[in-house]
Length: 457
Image 1 (cartoon, rainbow, N blue to C red):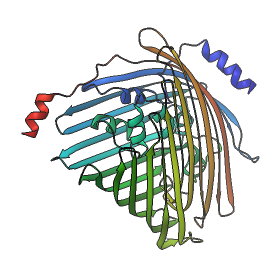
Image 2: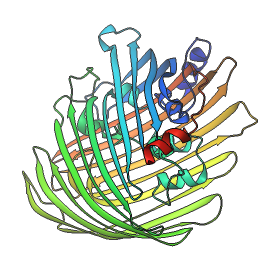
Image 3: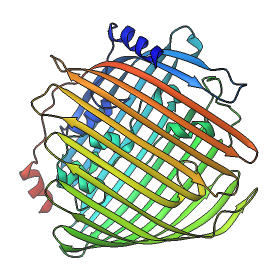
Image 4: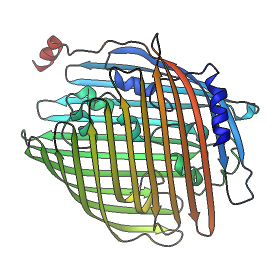
């Protein structure tokens, strides 16, 4: 703790950059705007300090001091029945003292939504991310990023499967991308990962109360050439993974505030250690409890079939359940969720998987500074060959400056433990990042009525 505080004092006196919100903060600025056309959504530079610990003895502990820059560019179009958005975020990280550890991070996301008549809607999303452990520890969880977007209560609820989005643009921005990288998985997957995903869905509005959804999702990941982070072995257990899910569901509105739903899905997961199918069915209940908060819960069962693996066997039948809650007030936003499922898409493994996460953000309209904090815990066990337990906590403060500048200080700590047969790997990382970033002022897009009417005709 003393060395972290000392590093903070040094970093605070250095010119560093980022925008408010997250490790690659320019992406949140993309979500805050629905301005059309090609735009730069933010640029930033930063200084970061990280301390790595790999017990037990045998792997040397070490510290890293990084500097770098990041930026996000994108293009959006919201006309008539078609909405498209795509953006690219890139960052360069330099290591003070070891030039061989310098590297680039990349992230690319594409989203499309198309209305077919008055009842049908088609959605397509694709994403890819090439990232390193040293920088990914400062990226927020999914809920962490969601809590920091300036959405309404209804749109925040819709992002957590409660109700519907107010418009297509907000749906594209808040639904997120189909792939993601959890730093707690570093002990299993390595310090440098390439992950990618593709998601497609079709929805049918039978009536104002009843709707049907059909979708498919595929994701993959693979280990890349490492940045030689000591303690994180290139000889990782899962060098390449692939998984996918096909699902069908229906939602019925009992009232403007209450929805019930039923869903069935078929999932396929494959690695060099395991190949299996998982059939799942569940029912859900979602309700907006008032103007500022909402709740959703689900429960069901999953069944494993055609499992083939090098050792052990996953459970044939599992109970799945979960719940989520959100509160949106003038200055405070709080979201939390618990999910137990029969598979883990991040590692493409069938087994007992639980994810607990929560995030809080305070940002008063009349204040120039804001606070945010998040926590996530990931556990996958009973796969027959491995167990993974990891958690991460982060907190930060941001200060809006003049000329569209924002100063951000963000702290993060993670602990990840992986057991594969008789081998155990453990990693502890704590770090702090000080940043300063610039975000342009972009006009918000208003629907072009004439264009819409022309397409309807």
